[in-house]
Image (tube, rainbow, N blue to C red; front, side, top):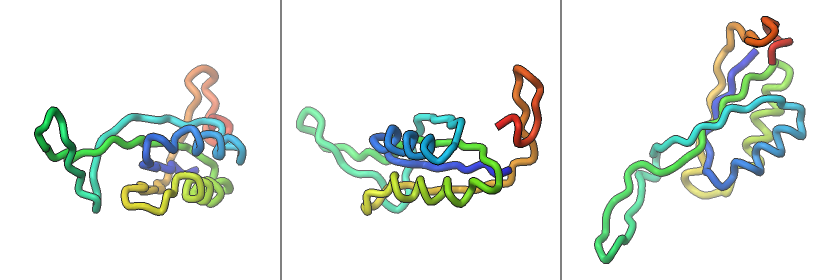
Length: 112
């Protein structure tokens, strides 16, 4: 099992969720986060004053998937989250030791 962590632009969330659902991903955790990478934030104008926004709003998705669904999950996120512009996000893949469904106690692949 793997844990796929994707950081994407907020307006892409619904599109990514629908696409992942379409390939058989059954569960996603989404968190509103702020961060910056190469884009280094931007400047905004508020009430005539210019100020720098260092941390930009993003969505962090955490998706636990079985090994046979990892590549398809990554490719789906890449296709649907990409705008071709700086700040599209990142994808991280981690080894997932165990998954346990709290309600039933199921473990491993069955818990996903």
